[in-house]
Length: 344
Image 1 (cartoon, rainbow, N blue to C red):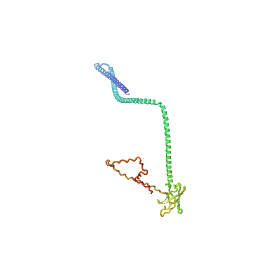
Image 2 (image 1 turned 120 degrees about the horizontal axis):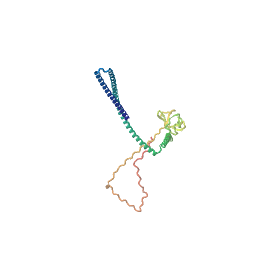
Image 3 (image 1 turned 90 degrees about the horizontal axis):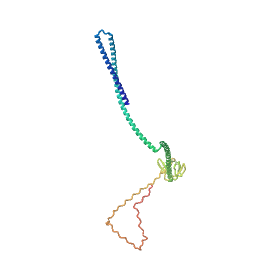
Image 4 (image 1 turned 60 degrees about the vertical axis):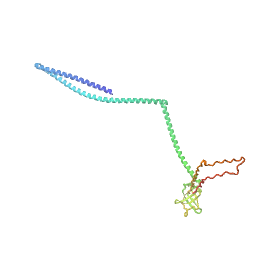
């Protein structure tokens, strides 16, 4: 683009110079013609004064020629002025074209730099593409690899779905197993409590009826409520144990229990509706084992103070050991044996 604008500028300058040159030549010609006409007019005037008898027709012709020449002179001046104004405009246009040329040259330089950068980038991309093609050529056909990758992706998705399903099943089974273990532990504890002859801790019932003559009462629940045969129960009123019962017979929804003698509090009479709970059995408390007393440390005697060892007597060849001799009994340990477990 810069070259094009430069060529256009040169053409415009050449045209402006050519027009200016032509106008200048025509102006000089007209000035020369005007000078010749003036000379002829002056000569005519001198001739007319010298020869008054010359016909007046020549004077008219000369005046006509003079007017024509003056018209041509005015036209030449007008053309010169127009040409000068046109040249001024052309000069201004040339200045603008120079500015445009400079800007276009800068743009062309920028474009050239961009083209160089793009060319370098294209070469780098081509090198990378060649490397990729070389690597893919080692691996195999891209289409076959794409098909294998799609198949592998589908298999991975299927495996992920299967793993998710299996994980859900495992979580369900784990929760079920935990519930089963919890239920089994609960049942185990219940069996342990029942085996120990105690009613379940969840037992909370009421006295349904009282038979003071025979010394027993009936309860409002049985096996289903946690009553165990031969277990001890507490009768509670106002948060205080007022009597104890010994279960004698148990059914599914009822039970009977004997009133333990001397367990009824003084001035208390059992009533229907008194709350019955399992008896609290105190756990044995094992007393801590006393620490053994430290043995005294005896310092060894110096070597010079130790008595000399006496030589052992040699036994006779025919001597036999005393059959009735017994070795000395072992002394018991100084530490006392721990006391038996104390029952509260």
